[in-house]
Image 1 (tube, rainbow, N blue to C red):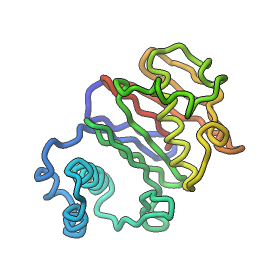
Image 2 (image 1 turned 180 degrees about the vertical axis):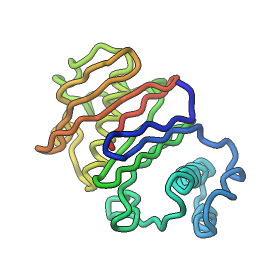
Image 3 (image 1 turned 90 degrees about the horizontal axis):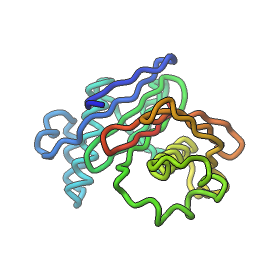
Length: 201
């Protein structure tokens, strides 16, 4: 599926994904002076570019908004302005928005070697949920999205964040049924080239 892309939910939320700009300079005119000062303090060129990219995407979609951070590190909009979730890979930036509820997104490349980590984030039962070759990548994104939804630290990937079921609508998209502690959550997933994104808005 081609990028950029914007998917809308029935509740008024949305998910935007677009290619990550190759040059930091191309983003500087799309953000605020405060953002440029913040970026100048980031030593890593990659992290600098990622920080500017999601802010530029946010301002394009919602207008310039003051951004603060929760103690867990999640970006926050002003009270009453809704909720956002942010993720980026080597090639893409993803931003989700919900007017009423916390939301989350995670995007990763399926070319990353998740197999060597799989016992750290999937129980033996979860590992049996699907034989799809991209399942480890999708499952990692699901756990990351649940962690972001929780908005608190020190959650155990194996016991606190659980995947109960995965359903493929086709080979490229579907839904996951999950538990965050005792809360049930349905997450969407979709493939874009070599990348997979999991989100809830």
